[in-house]
Image (cartoon, rainbow, N blue to C red; front, side, top):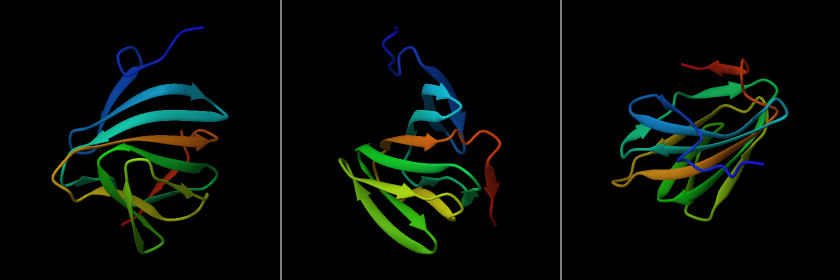
Length: 114
């Protein structure tokens, strides 16, 4: 058994200088920690099969889900059901750190939207 942290997890960069760490990579359960700098966001998209839960560790963010904005603060989370259009945004002045828990993995299950 290995203890996992952002110090030893597989790191990746996505979007415009956003960071991610694969804390658990399993076909049936995927857990990542991500950091989004101020003023950045991901592209609006859906997942055909995977459901996700976003949980804010530090900072503030907005989750746009099916055209409605949901403000989130540290200690709060939101469930995204499979097939629902969504976009994670950080319009604030500080970075946001959060967990994304996906079941099953989102590998090959992302459909970007305009």
